[in-house]
Length: 235
Image 1: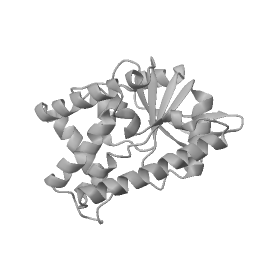
Image 2: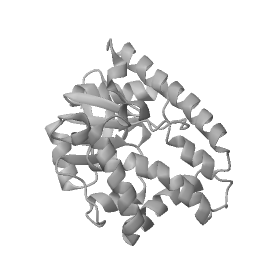
Image 3: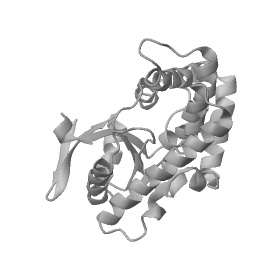
């Protein structure tokens, strides 16, 4: 783990998940920041600080918003599909607006071009191939399936009342959210047309540490990295 700091840019603590991830960070070609809807951590100020650091540190930057897939989590929590989709759509747009506002405050004139939500990804051929492959692998690979379910269990446990654990039906509904995110953890370079890319997030589930340690049957593409990035003031 190290601190990245430049003049006029907020200091960030950066923890690549592997030596290969560290090499991708050092090349500084592309970063994709995960910005979760329904997560108060991502205030406009926090997004602005992350963006300011990323724009200085990397040649290109995108922001991933898992907007429409958030509906799967709400379905797992008991919402009817229509209500879940409405909540996901509304909060997703709010999150996109926060990112756009943060980027405009940094002088970017076309911030929407840096957003990766479902509207952008569902028409992206590389994302489509990766997503489809993930769904098929989930169906036939028990080890991979268990890892995905554990990630979904972790997400749901943070949203249920204290002490309550999700049941198997809830996990099966929620896992579609994780499978929709997974292509960005495995091969962002092919999705955005880069040679190397690092996905940046503040709190990865254990399954991602296993993924980048090569412990799962599906491994990240060459040039894909992951780093835990948090403001140094938090440490």
